[in-house]
Length: 193
Image (cartoon, rainbow, N blue to C red; front, top):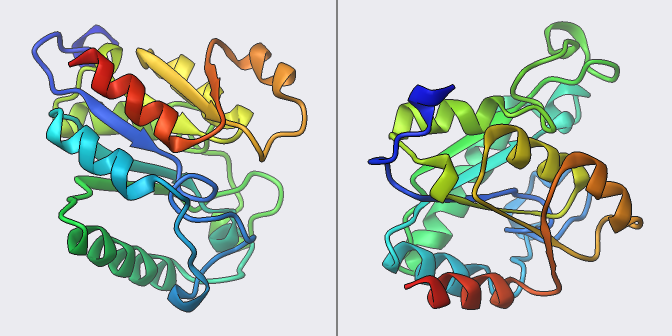
């Protein structure tokens, strides 16, 4: 674990996808149905300018359940990357978990260290991108995000309100700060400069 928390590593802004990058509609797979969350481009642009790497970490049970293929998911993410690039923003990496232990079909029905609240995607990103997780930030909208962030040793965990009905239940997954907009995260990052 210690070798993943390089004090000389880069800091990252980790982003859940559904509910943080795009509005949650349930099993999003079409670019035409994508509505970006208010403030996502401003947040990412400011974080990038402040030296943060931008990393998406997302559970994709829609793949596990057979609602869409990995190829369709990757095609949508390529389109999203292009939308960010059009705003002058580079997404450094996208990690996704296509598995579900109960609802998965075929090879996708299994447990995985990558499925949040487990920290697998974050730890892999730290290793592959030379990230210092203790200096990094994670923005999610579910208790599973809080769990993954805390298990990985993320320095600052933000929970965007609006998705989880019982925010207090997330406390069982570790510490976090509740925000009501992505602009609050952007302001926090700017204050650290």
